Length: 171
Image 1 (cartoon, helix red, strand yellow):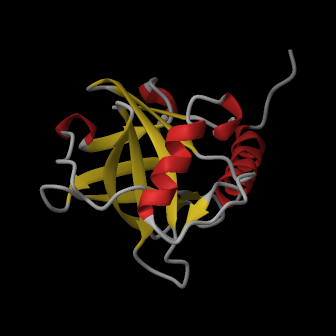
Image 2: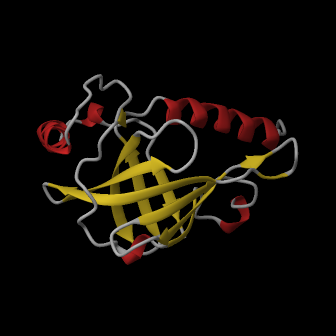
């Protein structure tokens, strides 16, 4: 049996992940303002693997309470050349609910890009969530949250409205 180089596999994964993240829909406005109280089930440290032996040196997320209606999300990526985690990407986020489904509006706190990344959030349990980014193929841009929410409501049931790269996360 041929031995697989884990570094090559992980590097390939991160290159693909970087492409996917950059291809996700960005909005100048959130779906709604921060009116939904936080869901305490998503507070904590989340990993892309449910198997503890695969958690080292992989991307992980730390979701904490910022206010009663906002989260602080840190995304930690492993730097293979320096053999340590990079400085985390920090986002402020809040929930919006459209037709009973939760959407996470994420805004990066540093850098020039102040747009929102919009993701559907599925909470399966206190130990398993899924984050589905809206598709980068969506070309429409909105100046108001009301119009964005109406757009999401109209198309949220279509599978191609979301990226294929669902992030399954585990505690």
